[in-house]
Length: 469
Ligand code: SAH
Ligand code: SF4
Ligand code: F3S
Image (cartoon, rainbow, N blue to C red; front, top):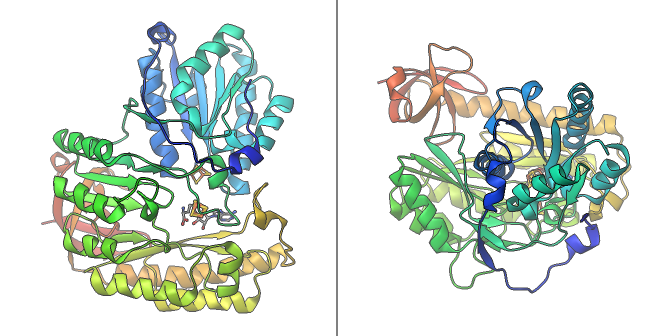
């Protein structure tokens, strides 16, 4: 058994990051024959993409995907630790699964992802969820076949979580959700240690993938007919800082040069957003003009307490530089209200920035203390009621600008990558514009997988309607 340790997770070793190729023990390739699996994913795109690797590994072992959890022989929860409610959802789900396991004791139940890296979660599982079968962490995703094998063999809870990151694994198998758009990891981990954030603990130190490996993957995706790639990292602007003289500007340029129709990237931290990056984004038509630029707070005092290393002014300067340089730039953001010690005046500073930037959309959250992070120990005397009121007031302003941003699209022509049938109306298709607007489109089904011109005929707060032209 190998359990996580928060102090170890915080350490940043100077060890060189090694690159290893994924390999599966051939004996494990028959373990899942005749059985089915169900993976439930929580959290960010990084987890969504990890689940694509997990599904492929399970299929290599002979498992087939089940259409629902109730019928599956193996249930795996790929979890997120970013806020308390993410935790609660997972423990709620485990409650449901316990009943399933009581009816069908052969069902195997596992947990992985960011919660698996938390000492307190693994303690709780060891004490109160002994009926589970296996737990593995974010640093040993590739060990899933071994962990499963050990758990089946020993017939008891198998826990294998490394506190420190291991090698960079290349050539992991992948079963992608889409045939048209693909996630591509460019880096793992985060070294920023924003004081509220658990990610540097759960994902380890920053490790950039080698440019050659990333470019190869994008080239292959293009050959396979993919229309869009999204370069993934917690803080993509810091890409390459651990490599030497190749940075995010270089990578964006080289990926764009491959000629895949759409290139996206998430998430950009306002720190490290270089002029070179802005120029490259402006220069290449196939780099989408959509930038997620988390603000978190508009108050310099709170930004400092958060350890974000920018000020309201430097953020606004960057925002306007991007808007002025990148034609059509669409900027969205993340905001936390109720950080420890946030006053009404601090909150007003956040509203000021929102009013100035008029974001096209924003994800807004109430601060959630995470065990082991510095902010969890800061004095916090604002009531939950007050925090909820701030969130409500913020959302009202945010929604007003989302609607305003959408309104300007009425009767305009946009380009949409059609992904599939619309969820709200199965006679329509759905897809996203270059600026990441969701559009429900009247178009023939044969056009799925293509980028088509669309005229916008109706505007809502969260989506647009249109017709192919
Ligand atoms: N790497 C990204 C953020 C990833 S987490 C960045 O630096 O911008 C996604 C969002 O969750 C964050 O932008 C933040 O707004 C929110 N978040 C992270 N930790 C949180 C916490 N402890 N409480 C509330 N929201 C949090
Ligand atoms: Fe968390 Fe900050 Fe890293 Fe983003 S940059 S993942 S908020 S520590
Ligand atoms: Fe959640 Fe981990 Fe992503 S904490 S947001 S799944 S990196």
